[in-house]
Amino acid sequence: MSKTLIYEINTRVWLNALSRHAARPVTLESVPDGVIAGLAALGVTHIWLMGIWVRSSLARKSALRYLDEYKTALPDVSPDDVIGSAYSIGKYEVAPEAGGRAGLAAFREAALRHGMKIILDYVPNHVGLDHPWVTGAADLCVRGTPELLDARPGDFFKSIRPDGSAVITAHGRDPNFPPWNDTAQLNAFSHILRQAAIATLSDIAVQADGVRCDMAMLMLNEVFAKTWAGLVTTPAPGIDFWEEVIPAVRRVNPDFLFIAEVYWNLESKLIEQGFDYAYDKRLYDRLLSEDVAGLKAHLAAAVDYQRHMLRFIENHDEPRAAVDFAAGGGAKQKAAAAVCLTLPGAVLLHDGRLDGRRIKLPVQIGRDPDEPRDPALRAYYVRLLSQIVNKPEACGHWTLLESTGAVLAYVCSTPTEARLVVANITGSSQHSTIRLTEAYGSHPLINVFTNQIFAPFGDRLEVDMPPYTTNIYEVELARPAQPTLANRLVDVARRTARWIKGDGPRG
Image 1 (cartoon, one colour):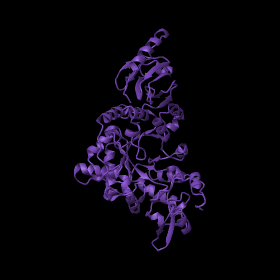
Image 2 (cartoon, rainbow, N blue to C red; image 1 turned 180 degrees about the vertical axis):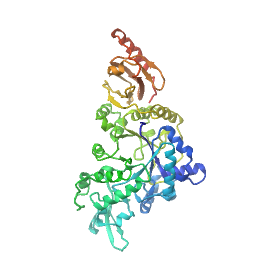
Image 3 (cartoon, rainbow, N blue to C red; image 1 turned 135 degrees about the vertical axis):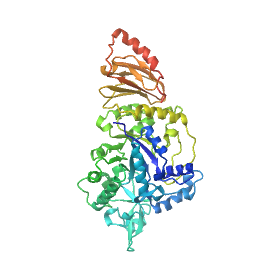
Image 4 (cartoon, rainbow, N blue to C red; image 1 turned 90 degrees about the horizontal axis):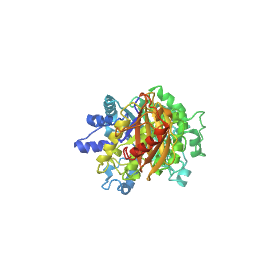
């Protein structure tokens, strides 16, 4: 079974760039096959077409007020570049500019020919200001009153129903931040809303192979009740939103993938409720802050939990990895990337990361700036991915090894082979003693990048690791174990430690 590798594409921006390159309009239906084949060659298993749905026209009007702010990312931005937030959805219909439903179907078929599946967005917590649900049944959304609108105009807005009556609705929100003023808050407790969500997701499930669910934890009964205490009078249902929705959608498509954007230590709860993968923001934070002790503690969690994690060092919400992981001349990014790719679970790659793009693009604009590419970084990623992703995952069994100091070490193995990873994610040189089991210490180690072979180490491995270095070794367990004599072990370890120093990719 290959590792799940999800490639996030800002769809409208990507199609715009392809159109400029081709000097003709390109939609999903007309994406060159070579472009799709290029993603497959990297080992991508799923393409996440972020921002594919029709966006709220009112959200675009709101976004136009921030034109000057967008100049940081796109200095020559014009009103034509502003298309509204990808997460203020006007309709769950593929935008005509992207090629519509037929265009998506054609793209999905082309991706499938190359062995890849499609993931789309689903935003459970809110919709665009002009989505039909806003003026629908009363308890579809969190409602307010004229008095609340007057007192808190930033928290509520007024819409006019088809019959001419007015309705006051709350803006969508995360309880820790101001409201998203281009959205309308949905009512997680509403039976009507849950049925509408099931219908919407069931339709998506016949068009795609999975969804990435935005801020999925906001729909949990406990979270929703605290966020909207005093405003929502609908009784809390006996089960959480996802416990009702996910099984219903899987009756339409049993293999449909659910990915949760989730924070606040609620990952395990959503996994228990049916999500296949949950964002691993804690890993991101530990890698960024170079918190090795925290990283070891995080990776000490049960392996079954680790397999449900989605690892990343960049996505559309976070700064570009080329900026935040720039230390060591970019070596910090390489080390973090190698760790992400060799842990259990899925991996998220964000379009542009492999080329060293540095500009974080607002989700409200549809064109990206021209940026210089980093061919050396792409070459590193191609090499890393070819060694790690484009082969069956050697992770039937995963073990975090005991290691001294600020060095991370772990083993993924099957009955016939194992992969030993030794990583220094800090900006200083590190010495470490790694305790190996006899199963690994009695076999030669092969560096996957240099093909150097190192003699068996016994039960301890001494390493000196330069800053931001991740070394990856294969252990061929099928070969007969080589005996290790006590009077040779110390000499072997010393010599090998000298060989190891700097022998892998400086990552």
